[in-house]
Structure formats: structure tokens, C-alpha cells
Length: 134
Image (tube, rainbow, N blue to C red; front, side, top):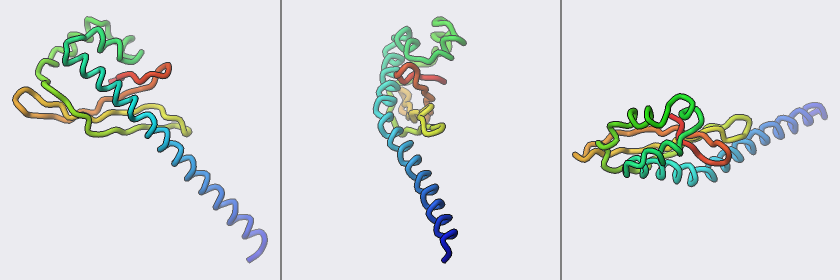
């Protein structure tokens, strides 16, 4: 094997290894952010179920604040009384250039009659805090 091929092989290994390190870092970052994102989702849902809509609205992202007034938000959430409880069933995240950009908490929402539906609650991080951003 010539010296040129060895250099190419080493560069290829380093390039692939670097990509693997970037993927591992992104996964590590997502793993670190899962508990705070889930806690934010739980706080939001607890506020909704307790009919504390101003608190829930305060936990939403800038985009929602720009698109909805608190009154519009309250009207939009009018069917919330049909939900009796929820459980967190999963988490996913999205990265860009190795930086965690957004996440979603997966939920199972139960009605008072025991029926359920699954929902994905999109979230974004603003000023260091996770915000609901549907």
C-alpha cells in the first residue's frame, strides 16, 4: 500500500470518526435536555388541566405570543376540560450543526371516559427555557 493511500485512509477514518463524535455529542445534548423539556411540558399541561390558562400562556413561545392574544389562546383551548389526565410517552429532538434546536414531548391524553389519543407537543428553547410552540 502506498503512502498516498495510507494518508487517504487516515483522513477518511478521521472524517468518519469526527462525524460519529458529532452525532454522539448531539445525542448527549438531547439526553441532557430531555428532563427539562419534559418538566416544562408537564408544567404546561398541569396548568391547562387546573384551568390556569394565564400560566399556560406564559409557558408558550414568542411565536404563539405574536400570533395569539391571551384571550385567543383561552378560546383555542376551550376543549381542555375533556382531558382528565395525561402521561408522557416519548421525546424527540432536532439538531442543526450540532446544536439542539427544538424538541417534542409525546403524550397520551386520556378523557374522562377512559378513551385516549396521542399528541406530540412541539417545543423550542428560548432564553434558556423550554417553551411550548405548537
